[in-house]
Image (cartoon, rainbow, N blue to C red; front, side, top):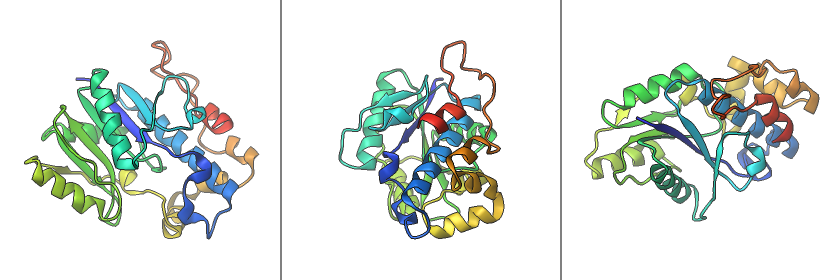
Length: 235
């Protein structure tokens, strides 16, 4: 089985607008870059992920080895649907769709999510409030419409029912903790604040953060490596 990860990323200057009341534009951009790099790093280390693709017009954010997909327009759900079809056309048997703002996400959680999702061929990761959806795992090429947005977890469950598909609901801390609102930021600062303290400081502090890149990755010989430091410095 070939499992691809699929993300969608806005240009940093357009992202995280709901944090504008507590972060400057420069701080929001740095935060977006660091969180994306953290998610890519976790995907790189995950045993069950064979390749990564990102729908984005900001291709400069992507390190070497990550596939850039064109944004067809029409919003997030349309872009992800088109992205999934493109990956299936490239030979993907499974697609893991996830958000790029999951700073606690680990490789072991990604592997667990994919493995559990294979039992039914569809898995959902709710956010910590149980309202949103932070990841969807889909096996096969059957029809499924993404429903990200307000109350997306309920809407994804309804979509599964409409398609007569059994959805496995998987609660994992790294998938549950996204950062969209000031309250999310405050919650994360109270638990794992070193990442954000670095991101919200000076440009230099990003390079001094605990997110140090590995000297090599398992993808390097293929070649599919990427550097966390590269993502932070050049994103």
